[in-house]
Structures are given as C-alpha cells and as structure tokens.
Image 1 (cartoon, rainbow, N blue to C red):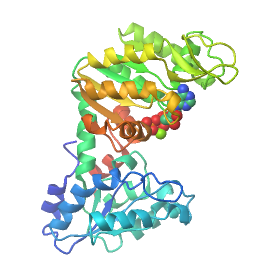
Image 2: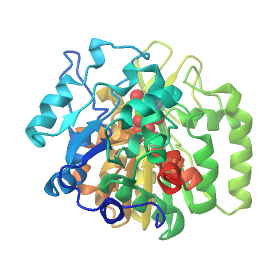
Image 3: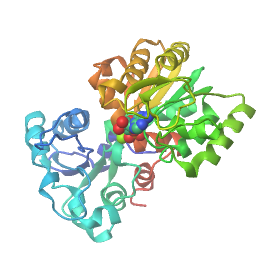
Image 4: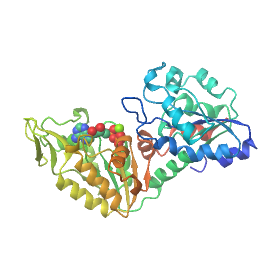
Length: 374
Ligand code: ADP
Ligand code: MG
C-alpha cells in the first residue's frame, strides 16, 4: 500500500502535531452482552498504537466509530458509553464522538455530515480497517478536506492481507465456512485464482453438495447459488485446484436427535457441523500448507454439540507451521473461545473488509486516502 499516506507522511505534511486536533476513525464496533457490557475489547486495544503515536506528539485526539446497526437515529442500546468508559481506562484524555450511525448521513455518505465531522479538525486518520470496505461518510469523506493518513492498524491489516494475494507461499490454502455462500461467492472466485486448494465447511457446503446432486435433507442452503457452485467446481477442476468438501456431517436427524451422516443426508436431517473424518482430512491439508487464510466457522459452534469441527480446524491453524491469517467476527470469536487466538499469525479486525480486500486488492477507504485533497 505504498501510495497510501502513513502517519509519518501526515507529520511531514502537517508539521508539528502538538495541539493539532486529529480525528481518528476507529472500529470500536465491539461485541456487547445483553446488559450492554463489552465482552471483548480487542478492537479498542487494536487502535492504541495509532492513538498513542498521536498523543505522544501532543495531538488532541478525537476518535469516532459506529457500534451495531442503529437505524440512522439515536438508540440507547447502541450508545458509545461502554466504549467511552473502556477507552478512558486505556487512553485517558482521548475523545470519542457518539455513534456515527445515529446520523443517517453516515451510511448515506452525506456531504453535510462530512462537513460536521471535519469542522475544527486539522488532520484525519483512518484506523478502521473493519469499516474501510464501506463508502460511508466517516471513511471516504474527511480525506477530501483535511490532510489524512492510514493508522497503524489499517496499514498492518492491508500489508498482511495483500501479501496473501501478491506473495503467496505455496501450498496456499483458504478455508471458508459460515452461514451464507452468497456473502462469499466473490471471494471464492477471486481466491481460486491465487490458492492451491480451498476447504469449504459451514452451511456453505450444502449449496456445493446440492450442486453435486447430493441430498442435503433440511440443511440450510441457497438454491439461487447452486448453478454458481456447479460452475466453481468445474472451474476449479480445469485450473488444477482442489475444492475440499466434507465427507461426513454431524447434525440432527428427522426426530431432532444428534446424529452423524456421510455426505448424503437423509430426509428431514439438518447438518450443523463437519464430521470428525472431515475435520481430520482438513487438518492434514492445513498441516501441509505454507500459508492459510480462514474465514467462517465450520459449523454452528455457538452450540457446543456442533463446535468440534471448528475447534479441530482452529487447533490445526494453531499447530501448523504455515503463516496463518483469520478474518471474520465469528471466526475470531471462535478462536478466542478456544483460547487459540495467540497462536495465529494475524487475526484480522475485519470480516467483510478482509474478504473484500482479498477479492479486489483495494478498499474504498484506501482509495479515499490515496486521492486525498487533490
Ligand atoms: P464470520 O463472522 O467469521 O465471517 P459468518 O458470519 O459468515 O462468519 O458465519 C458465522 C455463522 O455461521 C455462525 O453463527 C454459525 O453458527 C453459522 N453456521 C456455520 N455453519 C452452520 C451450519 N451448518 N448451519 C447453520 N449455521 C451455521
Ligand atoms: Mg459473522
């Protein structure tokens, strides 16, 4: 990301930052429990290197983030107060604006909202990797008006994720899971260009099974994408790439009882996890790889009966000598649940953003920083 201005470039442009008011767009979209308490402050801690770099130079830092999905109006459930309290402990004296999405201008990228954001601001730093795939006001607006730069977190995320595309170590394996294939079709196509093999788990595998003509019982699948999966299977074959699909599945039978199946599910059965044989097969592929990217759990791991596949894959990610990168909110939560997050080379703070940069090699937030005030 050579052309994207760094904090050093910003200092060279603005001069002494002492007393300068710097708006930092952070991704403080933290998970909250039912009582509104933060369950994981990983995203707040991840912004500290940038915040501290600025405060060490005497800058007056104001952070801004969205939290949850309020509908363009104030909603007490998504107040930034719990984040503000935690931030005050981690970085005393740093400001935090109210939830950006309380204003409909944020998602609409309204120029009026942009002008209120940059009012009185001397410089802008984007450190919100997890929101940089969105053309929202706080992401793409400020660089048009004030000197701007990428923060340390954004820079590091982009460097790591682009290295997967540009400098793959082979074998390069991508593991995709999660609930919906429709979220991930673009990245499956793009990844087929760079990976040596693709592992597919999660509910996504049932759309591939349907494409292979296998019965899937009542498992979650997306009928509109069966044809695309057929084409992807053919294309992978033509390009000498392997798509590894599970050959056993755990779930519930027609009576709702826990059961293990092969890759052909009986009537009324629902698949909720990859089976032990598939988990072992996927482990072998991960252990033999030199680079692995993982997005999306292998099953409905929130239910402990269906966590085994995700846990086995997470353990293989921890054990392999390969360079390992994990993107995706639920995948990162699964790693944290199994206490394996420290064993991964790079756990991305962005789900959608990590997939989009792998797919396109760029993000709207990065484009805005490159274009700047020109
Ligand atoms: P990430 O946040 O890591 O990108 P996703 O949001 O795409 O992952 O998918 C996570 C969700 O997918 C989890 O809530 C999980 O329960 C669900 N899921 C995975 N496999 C299945 C399955 N076989 N059936 C139903 N839901 C599943
Ligand atoms: Mg998710």
